[in-house]
Image (cartoon, rainbow, N blue to C red; front, side, top):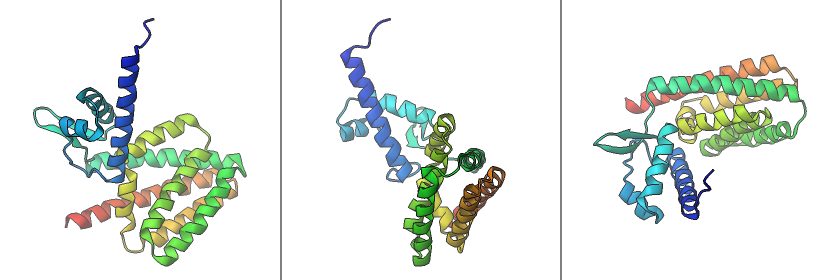
Length: 226
């Protein structure tokens, strides 16, 4: 087998760095949906040649974060309503399974961290701090997935969350009147069932919670378009 040369390794390293930075910029909303992604401009921004930029964009296209339109350009992808629905259906399946697996594991460190998360979330709701609560929502779901202790499930979940750019979407969902309190109550129900080691109940309620979040998101998006 031919070993990679130093130059090839360096190119691969640059591609990975560029891909990761662009990925985070898209997920956070720093690069908004429909933003144009010029290879030349990105090459200047990152201080690298266009080759690692081109390869990084190909990787992000595979992940569903970037859309390439032949003879037009490359843009930050905007999931259609159907694609959002399909992604949330997968989110429901994965997070439901994760809640079930975590419940069966018993009193593991992630459960204690979930309890601390809920205390902070309750305070954010009392203060009406939607921005802080949004960050805690992300942590809550992430802890459940990590706590499931299933590397294959977690890998699929990470890819899914990147495609959703969830950090941006959750703010739209939480903008619905009363959704902050509803979401907090749903999280409490999930955690109570995990504590009780009720895997079936934890999976059912977690799936219901994801469905409610999806409904709130779609309603919030409709209101913004109106």
